[in-house]
Length: 271
Image (tube, rainbow, N blue to C red):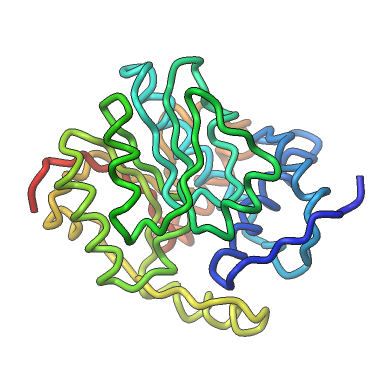
C-alpha cells in the first residue's frame, strides 16, 4: 500500500508519529513484543517523513505502551463497564489492544488530529472521538455522561505542555472525577538536554515539562499507586517478555534509572 493520506497537523501534534512508527516497526519485527497491525496500516497509508520520526529508542516507546496497556487491562478486569479516556490520543490503538467488549472509550485530541484520526477510526456505541484540548473544560461533560469509574491515560503528551498547564489539567481531573485512575509518563530535567538537541536537529517541538519525582504531583489531589520504568516494568509486563529482554533490562537498569517513568495515580478528589 502506498501513502496517499496527507497529514496536516500542528508541530506538537506531529509527534504522534513517534509512537505510531515504533509500534509499526515492532509489529514487523521477527519476534515482536507488541503486535499492532493497525499501526502498520496507518504508517503505510499516511504521507509523513518516517526518517524524522524514527527513533533509536523504539524499545523504550514499546515498553511504555505495554505498561500503560497492562494498567488499562487491570482496570477493566476490576471494572469491565467502566470508561477509559485517552488524553491526546493521536493515532493510538490502545482500544484495539485492550477492548473487553464492554468498556466505554473516549479518544480526545485537538481538532486537526481528530480530523486525521476519523479517516481511519469510526465511532461506535461504546467508543467516541472528541475534538478538544485537554487543557479546556468543554470535553468534561462528555466524559461525565459515561459510566464510572474512569481511567485517564496519556501517552507521550504531557511533556510537551508547560508545567502550569499540566498541573492545572491534572488538578481539574482529580477534583472533577474522584475515585478515578490516571496513568502517564514523565521525564526528569536531566534528559532534556539530549532530547532538545535531537528536536532541534529534526525541527521538532521541544519538551516543556520536566518532572524529577512523580510523588510531587500528589499535592494536586492524586495518590501515587505505582511507578515503573522501562528497566523495571510491572511484574505482569516483565513476565511476558522473552528471556533475552529480561536479561537486557537487568543489564541496562543503571543506565535507564534516570530517564522515563510511567506512573499510576488514584484521584482523591481534592488538592
